[in-house]
Length: 412
Ligand code: PLP
Figure 1: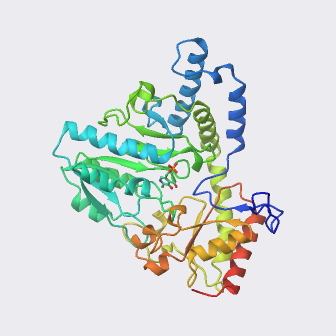
Figure 2 (figure 1 turned 90 degrees about the horizontal axis):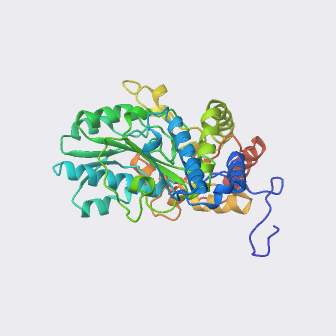
Figure 3 (figure 1 turned 45 degrees about the vertical axis):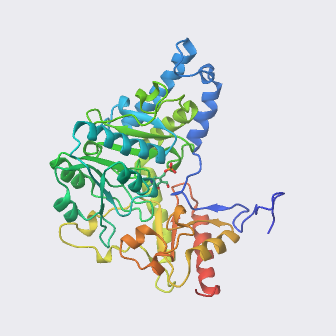
């Protein structure tokens, strides 16, 4: 296979390009973001610091405010522009939101020490458990049902007046399953607790009940905007104590000179995706159906990791269980996901295990294990993720390659 001067492979079997199907880890930059970046760098104010008083500084600040407004509009104005704080991405937004709100709550009411965190949160949330315990919070893990939803009965029974915060992701990064956020918010609010949602995978991919969410985080690079820019949204009235110090930017919540071009490109991307959302979603769903029909045909031996077959038919009707479009989680019995990823990579296809961060983790995906998978089964899942830009030819070529690999490679 041809290689470049650094020894990296340059071509794949499909039209001489690598087929990238790992959008849940990070998306290619959208044209709208590229255009916004190049247009912005032509603007005189692109040289300026948005905190400067002179004309260029004020213009830079206006560009930043326009991006804040676009984000607010994408939440149906449930979050005001002034409630949007630009950050360096999802993880920073999550850290600032959770620590900031908890310190704010603690100052108002030190008796509220309980924090509920669902068992399948991304590490950006889950890794806060130890530091939160160290500063005196009691962390309660919310179990997950076998069909990938937060256990509402558990929440109902256990959230009480000592609860400060409930943290549940809007949609899961491995299964794409969308959580019942409205009900979770009702349970939290009934006891005076707040709801934080990690919306890194959900933002602009499903209708979120923004009016019920007290705070959320998202990242530009999951929706086609540049990497290194994201936002924390916290409603006025939610107690918040700053976690970073050193300047007055972003309402003192995220001091330091902002990533102005990143924010501008983010704002334009949000506007574009928000406006085209229905058409984008329909196209992704068509492509997901194509991949699923191929991979999950009777004779392939590959199964969906997320089967809604066993979902309950009572309160939570199957048809109410939604997934964000564009994540196909495939369980390939007998194969370790790393083996498959490397074999696919050698043929020019880029996909992840259940999540990009799971690679190399013993026992496989924490998310799938929380849903009842054994360690072995959890280590045999692939996540194929894309948006409307993936071509049908690339998706078909990927499916053919995976089926061929499963036929010729020895099982574990
Ligand atoms: N939360 C979820 C659900 C994610 O999928 C990710 C990234 O994969 C993050 C948080 C972290 O976001 P970032 O990589 O922008 O810090």
